[in-house]
Length: 525
Ligand code: NAP
View 1 (spheres, rainbow, N blue to C red):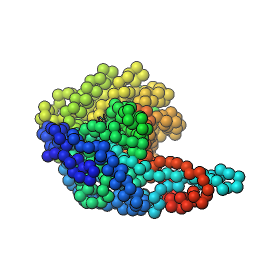
View 2 (view 1 turned 45 degrees about the vertical axis):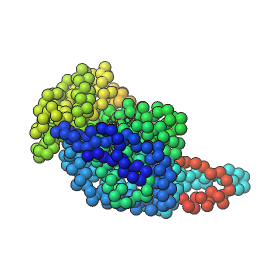
View 3 (view 1 turned 180 degrees about the vertical axis):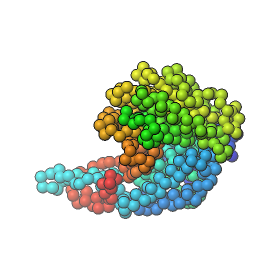
């Protein structure tokens, strides 16, 4: 099966052998993708010329209806997305739900909150400011949708959610979308895009799907386009430093990799409810989607006196979870996406082992349940421990994108804060503690280097959303190594797809424009 590209309003197959998508359990080929011979320049021009104006002819209300229809269409095809997730990612029900249901929920969420923007087509920001003595000359800020295309270059681990969390705010803004899913798992994003196209929901040019290599895509982006990238820091650097992107100041949003942390407070003793909650959370982060989540916990900071107790508690839980073929009902942990990712994980673990001891797992030759270890791509869940985080370097730097985490002992709050900061900017850190003074010190000590801090004390109990759970109402992104991007946060996400300008002139002109605009204040409410 060849996954055709959808560009300039038509399905077109790429040339050449393309790249194979495989079943990570059997190693069998499932499909091929290729963008060879596809006129990417024309595809972008078509999106800008046809898709953008058609979307912008609608009000926010009109576009909200499109999102609602997309949400319904995706929900109706959910079973097929789960089937593809199982085949192409080895995803069990929980793994697939995180991606697929997360995607559908996000699309429906934007269809709901977008209603606050009513009938306007642009946004008026703030009040009119007087610029003359008699008030005949004023300034008014506006936000207008970019007249270019929103180009999404996505990572392999969230083919469904990565698509929808970007598509919903872009379409709501009135900007046509060009999706370039990661090749190893492009099938799911392709199928969702195909379902949306078949349902005839969007105007011509409002959606394009490019499968396979991005090739010369960036070469043809321009000042009105937005490139929203999710993936590794290394690829992010190549995208940011692309000559055309630099020359034309193409707006780029980056969500990159991240060495996320969880912190156990010194006041939390082994065996308490809060201690057990952290144990469960670490195990969930290590095993859900086989640890292939950008937000997954990689470093677990623990007071030195509780290092052993925490290691034992996590290892006990991990030992009860079977890793192998997700078609076997006993299995709780699936494979990583392919042999290349498996090799990258094993190499990363080898580096970490140079400065850590193995608490659980770490066997490169382990036997997955119901799967051939030679053909499949499994990594045994592995918990490591680092006694000397100060002199260690790999634990703060190497992202093993699989079922792995490292315990790091700390002796003082100040030392722990300094060590967390050595992640150089992360998507999320969680703190499990009851002591308000400790919580305040840690939040203020690491907040500037994180996009999200999740604080859990005994009053929260089990009612938290989850360390790795990105909710559309809250910010997703992080500074520094995490890419410096910002996504979601409710309607604030629309800012990426809008341009701000100020009109200075007579109030009759600014007032008339303001009357046709929705209030940008609703982005922040
Ligand atoms: P990747 O190798 O960086 O690839 C990401 C995307 O970039 C793919 O679509 C890839 O296409 C494309 N790409 C590669 N080289 C390119 C180039 N020169 N120009 C334009 N596009 C290019 O990342 P991945 O392996 O798919 O994903 C895993 C990484 O993503 C992990 O490090 C993870 O932490 C990170 N991630 C971050 C977030 C977040 O929100 N911060 C979310 C998910 C994942 P091909 O697949 O065709 O090569």
